[in-house]
Length: 227
Image 1 (cartoon, rainbow, N blue to C red):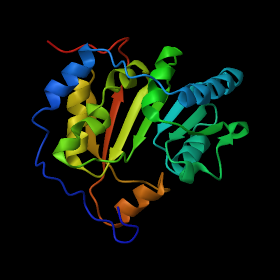
Image 2 (image 1 turned 90 degrees about the vertical axis):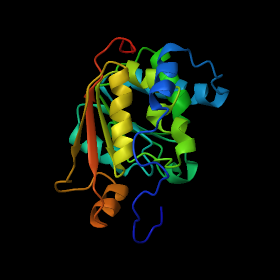
Image 3 (image 1 turned 120 degrees about the vertical axis):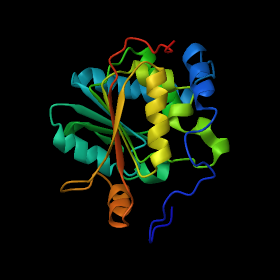
Image 4 (image 1 turned 180 degrees about the vertical axis):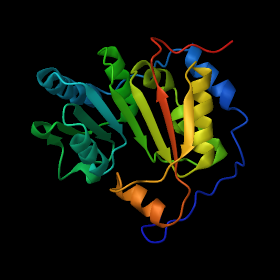
C-alpha cells in the first residue's frame, strides 16, 4: 500500500474464492508437518519463559507491525499480557521487549509461532488479526490466514478472536472458513470510535474505506469440519 492516499484493495476476485471450501476442509482434516525453524523455537522458548513468569491471561496481536496496536491493547487490558508478533525486524527494531508494561513485542514467523503456541497448550483470552495483508490475487488464497495450513492452530488457541479488514472478500472468506470449522463469526461494519488502534486503521478510515470487523468465540476444543 502506498504511504500517501490509500487505495482500495484491487483483486481479480469478485466474491469468495471458488476453492475456499476445498482448501479449508483439507487443512482441517490433515496435519501441517512443515518443520519449524530452529530460530523460531529459540524465540518462542524465551517468550514462553516470560509468559510463565507473568502468569497473566494472554492477548495475541498477530502481525502487529510497529506495535502501535499492541501498545493500545496493553493500555486497554492492563490485567493481561499482550504479545505482539511480526516478521519484520525493521518494524520491531526499536522496541522488542516491554514485558514490564504487560507487553511483549516479538520478531517471529507467525506460522511457526502459532504452532508452537498450540504445542505449549496456550489458550488465549483474546486474539487480534488487524488489517492482515489481503494477498488479493486469487492465486494467493493460501497465503491468507483463513486459507493457510495453520488455520486449525488459530482455532485451537481459543479465546475471543477479532479480525479487522478493509476488504469485504477477506472478511467473508474468513467467516466462511470459521463456519467450516464449526465456529460462528459475525461480520459487521466497523467505525472506529476515538483513538485508532493502528496507523493502518487511521489511514484506511480517513481515506474513506469501508472497514469491517469479524468477531468469533473460539470455544471449540478442536476444529471439526461441518458435515
